Amino acid sequence: MCKLALAALLLMPSFLPGQGNLLTVTPPPKQSAKKNTVLTTKLDVRLRPGYHVNSNTPADDYLIPLRLTWATSPLEVQQVSYPKPEMEKYEFSEKPISVFSGGFAITTRFKVPAGAAPGMMIITGKLRYQACSNKECFPPKTLEVKLPVDIVN
Amino acid sequence: MRVSFHRSLPAAAAVFGMLVLNVNCGSTRSVKAAVKPEKDRKSAPQFSLKDAHGRAVKLSDYKGKVVLLNFWATWCGPCKIEIPWFIDFEQKFKDRGFAVLGISMDEDGWDAVKPYIEKQKVNYRVVVGSDEVADLYGGVSSLPTSFVLDRQGKIAGVHVGLVSRNVYQNEIEQLLDNKSDVQAGTGGASADAEFSAGPR
Image (cartoon, rainbow over all chains, first blue to last red; front, side, top):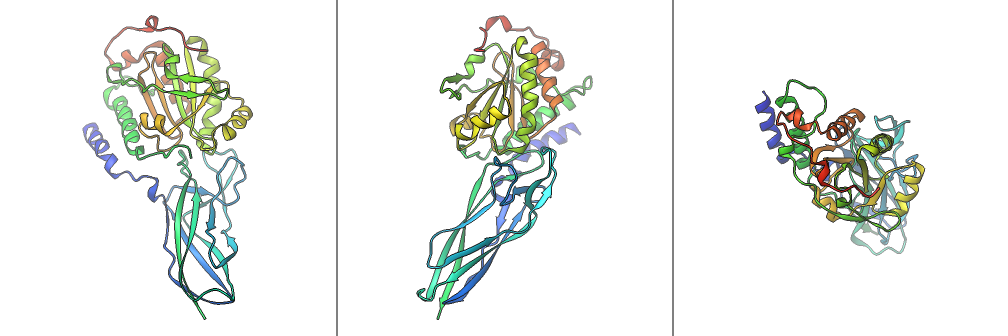
């Protein structure tokens, strides 16, 4: 039995996932938006079971918040909205901490200016997060997000 | 993050797992956490990092001591749980030739670390880490990651993630008592006298 377990452990490095796929973002589909309107987009995020990220409003100053930011583009960011965080108590926390886990969506409202040039554009965003399990934490990471938008008259 | 925290959680986890198996499969006499047998220990990579006062801290400064080398960060919740344990260990065992050395992996360096360790009343030495040092120790892909070093500066235990206080304490006491050879059934002698005292 021990030999079997040892053999399994020796093979384990090939199968253990790294932080790369702890958090995944579904690439947002192409959207069309008319000039002088508001475009609302949802970014679907999913965490591997057993892991969480700090919410956008962690209670402790030392914790790194989840943050979605968008690069300057012809569209104006009006609001980035995060879901209501969960308050979870972990083995390492004295009191519940504000986190996201499982699947959730971050919503962004863009104002499409009346003077925006028609045509396709890619708006680039950055999702910064810091993930932990009940026993270990991974370094903060930033994922790039690309949002294709077609401005129409 | 100062450190890219590379790819090596799998490797570190495998090392840790093998250490655990070594205990559980290799001995039926003890269920306590045990350090690696002396013959299987590798030398801890040497490094030099700066403390909060800008003074160089070298691992070689600790020659002759049992050392708990703890990679941590201010944003790491599980690390925060361990800090009071390490403060206790430092106080309890320092006169027996033990020291904790904390290596912070905060990308903001001392701006983040200094107020934190002051608030936590950390009584052991802390340095700010680098990619290079993390690489030397297998990448340190998640925190906390701790290495328990024997008096010869060899790695006797590796822990990735939060483990219990007793696991650390048992290992430290085994190394201070130099009982690891008994645990491993190999016999052996202490080499304490060969090394000069550490810096503290």
